[in-house]
Image (cartoon, rainbow, N blue to C red; front, side, top):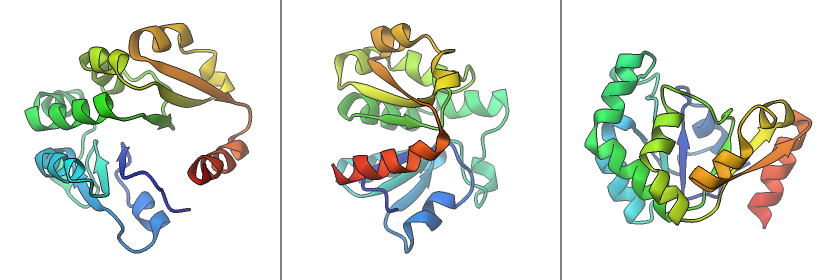
Amino acid sequence: MALQASFVLTTDYDQLLEATEGPPTRQVYTWKQADRAHADVKLGRRVLFKVHGSAEAEDSVVLTDSEYKRAHADPAYRLVVHYLLAGNTFLFVGYGMSDPSDLDIILAENAGALKGGSLHFALLHISQAGVVRRDALLREHNIAVIPFNDFAEVVPFLEALARA
């Protein structure tokens, strides 16, 4: 299934998304190339932004607290994430919506942009959807939770969304 979104942010280090789409259809950047990713996104180019780095670029991989802090301290990284969150609708897939070293920081740093922008969505398994504070996600970050019962529902949901 080809991803129709013009940009995709991922925390994956591998090349699974690139392989899923077939021949290169989008430019791949890590957080260390955030300035170039930002420029391409602004030009409407298709971008895959690997916010935790890529296994192919060892110096870009983010695993430890100090590496998270270094990535979040990068002005170009913060700028592109803010730009994307403020002007687009996001669908969070594969996150538990709680990650104190990364996602929570991004959400907190961009709370104003999130609340003042489009409604965002988080596709969460019912076991996770019950754990997260749904009301707080909606109130503080403008993120509505879409719960699902069975992981087999995810691909058909995404395919239907791509057709819509």
